[in-house]
Length: 445
Ligand code: PXG
Image 1 (spheres, rainbow, N blue to C red):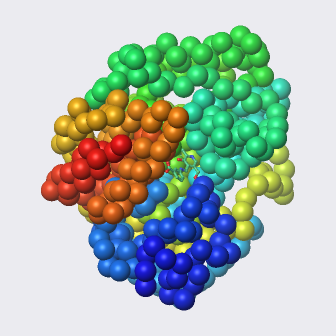
Image 2 (tube, rainbow, N blue to C red):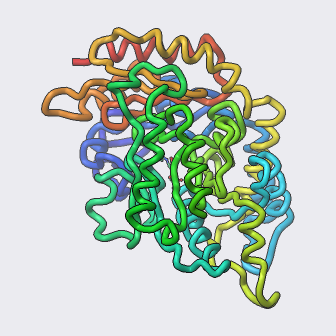
């Protein structure tokens, strides 16, 4: 089997039918990078080369790969109850898992709607926000506000409230009535911040600008990632999320935290809401909810949101929304086993214990060529490279490829390298990951 050829296990990669997501299909298929096995914090290539997983897969395998108890739970479930319809029927694990999930949520977020991905969670939360206002006689609240450089998945609602031009521009008008507040990234004032940057709390006031423009009574919800991870790890300035909460309260706007990445222990608390001490009205999540093993997402909501739907005749469907695979038995089994691992191993708080060391080792790379910022929070770090003149993104891509050769899987979005390893990582492995990254950055042209 060769990695750089067109043939792996008899399958032609170069001419493969697979239209790969968010990938450079033609380039990748000529020079594929494959993994065929994983264990703990490592991936293995088909030739058996070991790679440190620097980004927990795609920010989802928080407890590390192929954990025995999760594997066993999924195997047992698939052989017992492979599927159960979630509309007007249930299976025990769905109710048990829902109750376990909300126990870990910030106080007051006591109900959960299951989906199959982060994108579905986001669109579900946006629909819940609109329907909630309507149920309370405030159907005039129809606008949805996102933030520049936000990523909220790829469905229509999430693409519309998202703030990445490349993801939006080719899909037409998307969803009507959407606007965006400014992003918080400010290298001039905040480069090389450790944890939350000092400057930028006033950027939250941009929400007041949109309230003045549209009238707050037309705004249903604001959705933000507590830390915007996909667009290069943008850590919120101190006081910023608190101020967003105040402004939303002042104007009756629902605040949605998109915690698809920041949920499940990434910052040292089950959710970033608890880490920052700011409680949103809804939380969207996915990924780490099943340790990435079986697709699943969830929307957590405050009790009064749920109760607003539980009115009207009892013989009515309170929420005309849901998926064939909502609360899929395999996902619930994986989720329950995942929560057991998180709890037994203290993983939902472990990032807090590792963070000081992680931060110190990350910032030790300061001074390498082309590096213009290092930022971190919890068990996340980002390294921003100056774009190569005339070729933005080239250095990031090159770093990703070189790291793969040198023994680490890392993410690059544009010229920002992002790291977020499994929460089971040990200090010597952190050292190894940064050593590989140091070597890679040092050699970039
Ligand atoms: N919201 C947020 C905040 C996300 O990070 C989604 C929604 C969508 O989730 P699904 O499960 O539909 O993909 C995400 C996904 C990256 C990367 O490298 C990040 C995501 C997905 C793929 C790659 O930063 N986040």
